[in-house]
Image 1 (cartoon, rainbow, N blue to C red):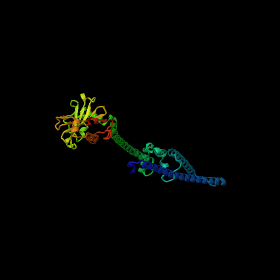
Image 2 (image 1 turned 90 degrees about the vertical axis):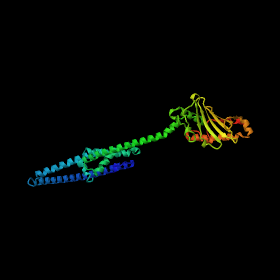
Image 3 (image 1 turned 30 degrees about the vertical axis):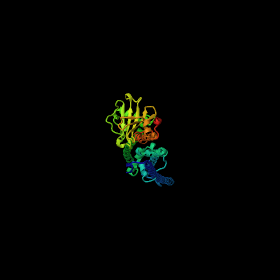
Image 4 (image 1 turned 60 degrees about the horizontal axis):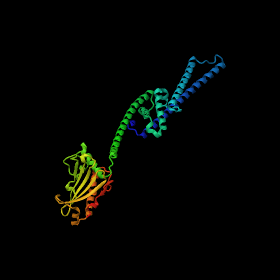
Length: 399
């Protein structure tokens, strides 16, 4: 049956409306039928009374020997009048209770409506009151329909009417209503279970969305991207469950470290040689944390570049904690790093332009190292916006 399915709000409202209209029509038809029968009874009683009066007048005019009604005829006449009056009083009482229960002042006129007078009782009165009370509530609370309509009562009435097909009797209505209560309870439990499921899913979605946002909001806001790298490496090295999995370690181009944690306050992260551009011998991050503390430490990025003479130009970018300065420094070594040359003299004798190598080093930082960091860390900086940091040291190697 339809009420066994899951109701949509519009369908529930339509079902309740149809149920109320059907009941009202049937009750009106029943009341009209009973009214017709009462009128017939009244007309019959009036006719009998007129006949009696006519016979009485005839008796008085013609004397004692003219006509005498029999005792049995008189008794049956009195009994019919008493029955008609009792029926009229009972019907009036039912009309009053019907009006109080439904708020309707019409009387049933159909054949089925006659059952209303024969079977009227507390069960029918309660059922009609449930139906009409719910109907009024629906009409008044359309704007807040889903929250305030008493659907349990509507479902009970609809279930009773749908099961019986008509208003049968007080007992039948009660039995249908009882089954409707059980059905309404099952539907209500199903709705509550669905609500709990929806709440759980909603909570899970909120946690899924809000948790990352909350973690990002609670993340310390560093002044520049090098502070991010410096702090992140320290926290991974000094926190037990993160010690072997730093953010830089997540880069596929970084070599795997053989040891974890701090080793005399020093950590190194090195790029794999096969991933480096042409002429680049090595790129290494060196982290220094004096006494295993963040204070007074630094991070240096060492880029070794092979010159045409096979000598090594070492481009060093040093960032000291909380300095907001990135210091660039160049040095020249022999191929085996056994000898260091005077920088300005070497550039002058080999006719090298320092600005060309400034550009090479700076581009490696901007186009390779910073983008690599941004791929594995949720930074608020970009490769073009490093935060509050100033690059210095250009004048140190002018020939």
